[in-house]
Length: 184
Image 1: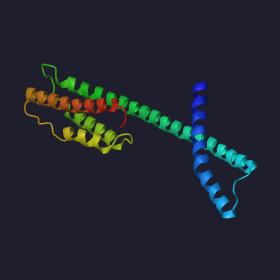
Image 2: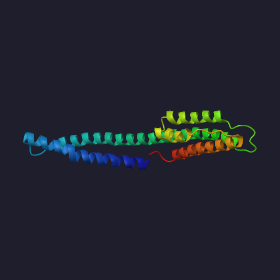
Image 3: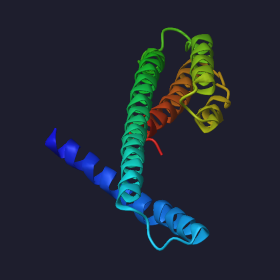
Image 4: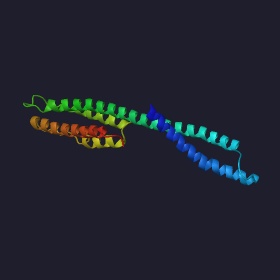
């Protein structure tokens, strides 16, 4: 509390000195020149000092308000990025589950290609539509998602599918890791 009060007092002092030595001094000098007076009365001096002090309090308060608003914006942005990371992590788990379904031998069934297409579309749309992310996230993921799955015969199709899902999940993991960095 005392540290905050001292910081606020330093802010008031800095603004008051600037006001008294800058604006107030210039205006007073101009007024003295215009009225051909040699000096101002001590009452006028203290009135000017009091007005400058009130303005200094306001300016110091405004500085603190702006600093607090900036910090709150940073906290809000961090919380939003965390929420995005958590949602993308859930999507990543879904993608890895699809990948795991195709990567176990023997290959009893063809790979879940339609589910994978739905998954990539869902990930892409989330990346594209999320206001916390810039367009590059969707574009970078789409680079991987546009490469179609090529089905040949059953074991090869599963291996190809597994590799493609691995590419997509790795791309998504890189995007999630990027979101762990402080906002730039």
